[in-house]
Amino acid sequence: MKGVAQDDFAMILGYPGRTNRWLPAGGIDQNVKYAYPAWVQASKESMDVMKKYMDDDNGIRLNYASKYAGVANYWKNRQGMIDALSKFKTAEAKAKNEAKFDKWSKKKKNSNYSDVVTNINAYYNLTNDKSRHDNYLRLVFRASNFATSSRGLGAQLSKYAVAEPEEREGLKERLRTGITDFFGSVHLPLEKEMLVDMLDLYVEMANYELPSRLTDASDVNAMVAAIFDLSILTDQSRMLAFLEVPNVDLIANDPLMMLSDDLIAHYFKSSDEIISAKSAYDKAFRMLVDGMRKSGLSPVSYPDANSTLRLTYGKVSALPSDNRNDAKDNYYTTLKGTVKKYIPNDAEFDLPKGLIELYEKRDFGPYADKAGHMPVNFLTNNDITGGNSGSPVLNGNGELIGLAFDGNIEAMAGDVIFDSKLQKTINVDIRYVLFLIDKYADAKHIVDEMTIIK
Image (cartoon, rainbow, N blue to C red):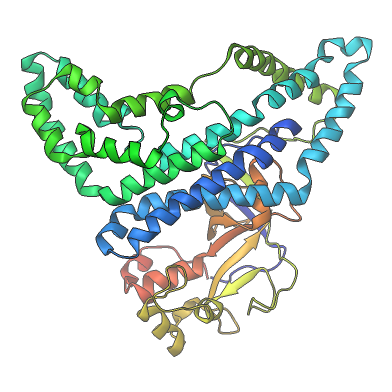
C-alpha cells in the first residue's frame, strides 16, 4: 500500500512468449523493410473494413470486437517494431558486429565459421520479396473468415461426404450446430467486402508470383461476387441442405473451396532454391550462435524467451519529464490524468460514469498516495515481451506491487533487443486494482480476503 518510488527494486515473474535476440542483421532488415510494412498496411485495410460495419451496428461490433482487437494489437506491434528498430539502428549495429565475426572467422583456427555470414545474408537476400508477399497473404487469412474455409467447415463437409452412413449420423448434429454458430457470428456483406479488399491489396502489392486463380482473374470483385453467389460455404441454407444430400464432387469443386485451397497451397510453396538456401541458413545460424559465444562478440547475455517461466528484475525507472503527464515525476500516472483524457463515447477514451463520480468526490478509500492522488500506472525497466501481460510485479520482499501489461514504443523492439535505459515496462499499480475492486465494483469482500501490506 505504500506504493513505489524511483529506483525501487521490481521483479516480474511470468511466461514471456518468444524473443529472437540472435536474429541476424539481414533478418531485422527484412522485417523492417519488407515483412512488417506489408503486415501494417494489410492490417489497417482489414481494420477499416471491420470498423465501417461495426460503427453502424452494435451486433456486428460485438461479433467482430475480438477479431478487430487482435488485428489492431499486432498492427500496433509491427509498426512499433519498425519505428523502434529504425530508431535504434539495430540492423546497422548487428551488421557491424557480424562483420567483426566474419573477420574473426577468417582466422585459420576458426575456419569452420568462414561461410556463416555469407550463407545467412544469401538466404535473406533471396527471401526478402517472399517475406513481403507472405505477410500480405497471411493477412488475407487473418482478416477473412472465408479465406481458410477449406481448412475449416469445408474440410468438415468433405469428411462428412466420404463418411459411412453411420458415421455421418454422428457428425450431422455437430456440423449443424457449427454451421449455425458460424453464420450467427459473421456478417456476409462485411465478409464479402473484406475478401475483395484483402485480395485486391495482395494482388497489387505482393510483387511476387501469385496463385493461379488470382493470376487468371481479371476482376477480383467479380470473382468474389460469383463465389459468394455460388458457393455452398457462403450460405447457411445451402450448407444445411448439403448435410441432407452430401456429394463429394460438389464440395471438392466448390469455388470457395478451390480458391481457399489454392491460396493456402501457394502460401506454403517454396522453390528448390529457397529450400536449399534455408537448409544452409539453418546450419549457419546455429554456427553463428556458437561462434558469437566463443569469439566473445555476442551481445546476448541470457537465453531467448520460449513461453516458459522467466524472472526479470530491474527498478522503477522514469522517462524524461513530459508536460502531458500530470504526475510530479514521470515514472507514474494518476487518475487525474486518466479523467483529463476523457472523451464521451470515444472508443479509446470513454470512461464509466461511476469512475468519474469517484474521482470528483475524491473517494479513493485507503488507496490514494500521500499527496491524495489515485495512482494508476508506473514504469520499470524490466525486460518483458508478448505473453508477459498480467504478470505480477513484485518488490524485494516478494509483495505484489502491480501487474505488467504494456511497454513504451521503444519496448516494441524487445523481441530483438533490450536496452534498460530506453525500454520501459508499463505496470498497473496494485493500489489502483484494489481501488477498482473495492470502490468502483463494490466488492470489498474480495479485498477483505487478501493480506494487505500497509
